[in-house]
Picture 1 (cartoon, rainbow, N blue to C red):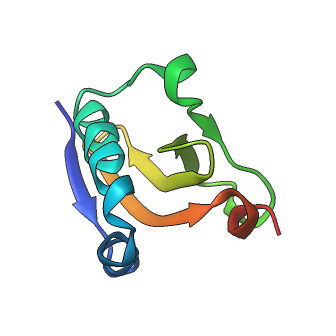
Picture 2: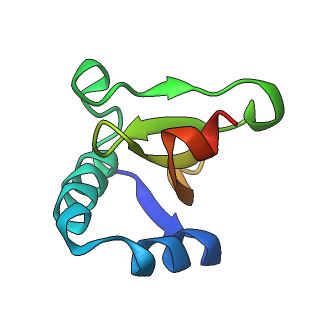
Length: 89
């Protein structure tokens, strides 16, 4: 089982989330503990360009949790929560 560490950016974004998305985000985070999650169901994929060390997982059709993984230490670092447009602008 992986340990999950939340960055300050992630915690701030999480607090700003509309309440209707908190439930979905919590469900996603529960799955991340048991890496790998259901990749197809949540569209887990590596990012490219300036975020090439990170992965994205869908929370809703618009919101994404951005994270990276240290497989040796079995730690998942939650970087931030962005909308699709924020991520790909």
